[in-house]
Amino acid sequence: MRSICTSTAVLSVLAIGLPSGLRAQQPGPDLKPTLDRLAARLDTLERGGCPGGPALVPPVGTDSTSQALAALIARLERLVAARCGAGAAAAPDTVSDDLAALRAAAAAAAGTPAGPARRDTTPAAPTQFIGRQRSGSALNPEISATGDVRLAAQEHGGRLQGDAHEFEVALQSTLDPYSNAKVILTFSNEEVGVEEGYLYYTGLPGRLRADLGLIREQVGDLNRWHLHALPESEYPLVYQRYLGGDGLSGAGLSLYTTLPVSILHGTHEVWLQGTSAESPALYGDGRHATLLGRVQNFWQLSRSTYGQVGFTALGGNRGDSLQGRVLGADLRLTWRPPSAGTRENLTLRVEGYRFRGHEAGTVTTRYGAFADLNWQVSRRWILGTRYDYVEAPRGPRTTEWQLSPTIMWWESEFVYLRLEGQHHHDELAGNDNRLLLQVVFAMGPHKHETY
Image 1 (cartoon, rainbow, N blue to C red):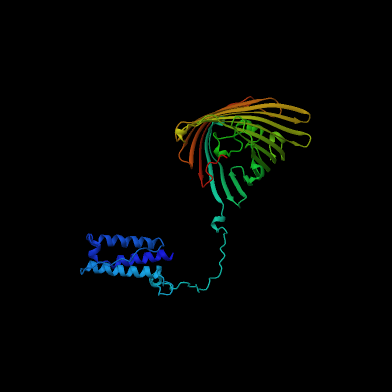
Image 2 (cartoon, rainbow, N blue to C red):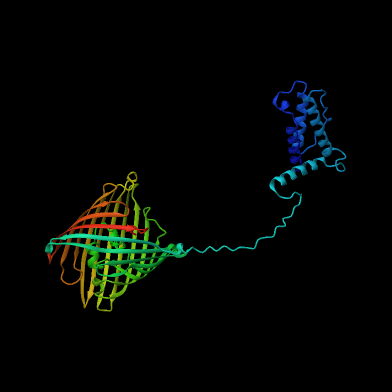
């Protein structure tokens, strides 16, 4: 380190000491050998060595250039003698003087006292502990609101009716690194209640997710969806007749995981749910323990097409007098070309269910199904239709079917409008036709969540 500083000091002296005329003009031929030897000795000093050979002889001349060069050579040779001479240890350390001068100049520029071993005598500040608690605003949950307003014209009775069908307020928040929570309140003409409210944990051993609280159960492809996010205005008839008017929901525990195996390069998911559910078809009235199991399989068939196949089994008892079991299978195919992005896709859903009920020694087995097709033809427009068929779950075997064509305009991600026609046939009540205009709007991060 000392040799480098020495060389730097010498180079600085040479650069400052040369007159402007010498720096600006090319030296004459008689000075070139002297300059070459001067450069060689400086290189040796810079590498930390001692230059060998005789000392440089200053040039003889009376011009200012020769006199300046002679003075610089004399100073260089004094530095060489001080560093490499026999009496260097006892001689005054001119190199150290130069380095001390450089240190003093640097300390003056920095505004700190100079010295080879300066100690920082500034008293240490007291230790400060910074809390990492969330601020008051960060503790607030995300709040969203969704509105579902309808205007319906019905053939039976010739009625034209406006309906503020349902409003939802959703609150969701990350509580800590382990758990999250959602609460979804519903406001309608009939009731004010809780659509869902649950705490869920992710990243548990075995790749488990656990949900605790009031949840919509994982039946088929659509029961988990909220009403405002469905591809049509209502749940399929088979859901309404076998599960309940608004599908099936219950309070309890849900466990979800993906299987660590892949069949034909697919992804396979499993749900196990135990809840206290309310279903008139299954139990008549009241809430009763319900067990559900579902396996869902997903395959990417091509860059633009994927398929999903699922199987669901659920059931429960109301004492010994009333039992209900439902088995279901569902298929979904979606075509979405990567080049079209969000502007074009086609989705086909087909689901079939078997209901088996035991009541007072009588066993009934009934069937229901639906097929749903939705085609997004552009960024804003979606065309669709659904066909429903279902047999009454209990009592006489009567059937219903319904055809529901739709056209939807997505004004934005916050608002969409749907025009839907319904032709409904009931074996007992006959035919009924209905035309529905539905407007759905959303505020906040929840949007039209489909899960």
